[in-house]
Image (cartoon, rainbow, N blue to C red):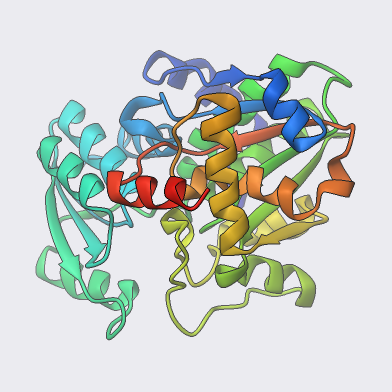
Length: 321
C-alpha cells in the first residue's frame, strides 16, 4: 500500500480533507516552557471532531468506501471517529472494544449511533475477533485503525499543518505518540514532503514498547499480550506493516515513557497549559520529562493526540500530583 502514498495523492487529500476536519490548535505558555525547560508548542487535537486526531484518518478512509456496513476494533478514539464518520456518511457501524475500555468512549460511540461490542482481549486477540465478525458479516467493510494508506494520508494533514505553521527552520523536534503507527506514519509522510530536515521523535509507553523494540532489532516485534498501559490509545501489540515500512526509514529514536511520567505529563498539561488530555495525549510531554537534557533549550512541538479521558481516571491521576 505504500506505493499508493504518492505525493500527488497526499496533496489531493490535503486539498480535500480540511473541509471536513477542524484545524489543530497550536498552544504555548510561559509556565509550560519553564516546566519543561524548552521552547514548547503544543499541537493539540483535543478539540478535533470526536476529540482526537483519529477523525482525520477515519473520514478519509470511509469517504471512499461503498459498503453500508462498517466494522472496526478500537480502544475508543478510532471507534468514536468511525462511528461519527459513519453517521455523517449514512453507514451502520459496529465497534469491537476491549472490556476495560474507557466508559466515556463507549458512551460516545453509542451517541454517534454506533454499536459497541465488548471483547475479552486477554483470552482472544482483536484479530481473531475481527475474523469471526467479518465471517458473520461478509459484506461489511473492516476499517483498519492504522494499517491503511488512506489512514496514513488522513493523518498526514496534521503533519502538513505542523510543518506549514513553523515554516523552514522553525522547529528542532516534533514528538509524536506511537500506537499502531498510523499517526506517526502520517507525520513522517508530511515531513518528507515539506520539511525533510526536521527530526521526528516517536514516543510510546514503556509497558507497550513494541515499536522501540522493532526499531532496535530492525523488524516488527509483536508483544505477547495487549499492553495494560494507562495510555489506552497505544494498547496495540505491534505496529502495522505499512506503518513499519514508513517508521523504519523515518525515525532515528523512540522514547519509552514509564507510567509515572505519563501521569506527570498529564498533570503538567493540566497545571501549566490549562489543557485536559487523555493519558495517550500526555505521552509526548512525558517524553520530555523522561529525557529532559535532550530537549533543554530546544524548539519542540509536542503532538497532543486527544482529550477523551474518563473523569475517574483523570481525577485519580490529578490527585497523585
